[in-house]
Image (tube, rainbow, N blue to C red; front, side, top):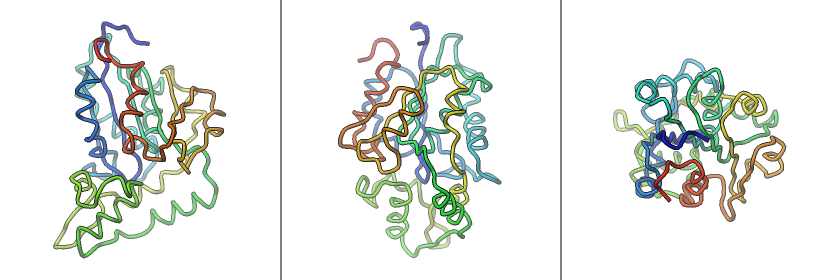
Length: 255
């Protein structure tokens, strides 16, 4: 754990297809439960973050590091980063905590990270990455597609402000803000990522998450938390339950 006299800054990283806006409903609780700053950037090719020439976990991580530049420069000698990432964002969080990055990462919480990928699943992802951008005649059509891609169906209404960040309107037509090529990021090497960090790591999943099992997470040899009654997007379904995972790493003076 970090020296308690230092501040802890929280970095929230969204999953594939979503944007940093997905964390905004957390703001009222973070105001009371997190003493330090918190940031929720868009990953490359999502929201307002420009696309990459090619997608890899390393390239996605480099973009986040570049965005953290001004923040990192202001960190004090005892300040620490706590990273919470969902799905794809969880993998990027682990990559950010690599020793070679030399970032002062105190802890990583990876939520809903898909551990096992079949050849068929990887083929499907590559096929999706090669599809051209789909255009929609109305915002409502595009919004419903966005909610499906981001795994947020039933969690936000199509007209919710959080959805706006995932959409773009050009010449009266609508599309998703996400670069389809991001689907080709591939499967992460989680054992290697875990071996390359000195940060405290917790891997969590919703009890009903179809993308990863408890057994798969436990094979990785780090603490595993199962969130009862929740699915893949547990951070949206029950923000309090996921925020509780941060409690051991919160700055002093907050419950």
